[in-house]
Length: 233
Image (cartoon, rainbow, N blue to C red; front, side, top):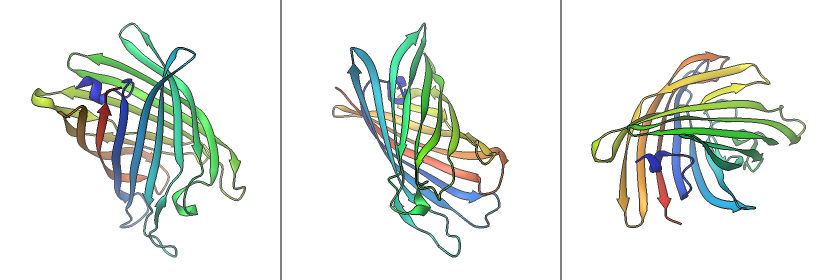
């Protein structure tokens, strides 16, 4: 169960995840959706174990006039982290890159972005505790689009239960450093891990409520759900 929920587990992975935002601050009756297709590939470079993660979103924007609601591919995010350990804590650190692959302006930033990703995980007999921190800044792209300077922190807590069930809290806190806005959600969900043939399957649902924010158009309530698969190498 810990291996299935550990983002630093050196296993081949395919994640199909979805984030549905039910409501926003300052936007009456607006919702949106992001379906995430994510692949994880463990590898070695010069004998150093690493983990490459690629995430491509399919974004459905808020239904706001005059553009209305649009659905298209979003921006591709990549990071490659070196894996190490300090005592009982597993660590990962490496570069991050976001490419402006969006199918339309509304579903992406129009900017190339680069930065860093850092992960720390402490496995326990009862579950996992840890966090992921990412930062990126735009360096090229459409000069008419606004500058990107974003910091995200995802603390996570996994509590194992009998028969493959577990409780989870993994909401991502986001700061737009260029605009001076932010939102901090708290999640409370559950999931189940099971084996099917050679793969490990992991299904979860996690409602998330924003408890602090600055600025309009910040998510107020969202539902994070997914199916994560791990395959032996």
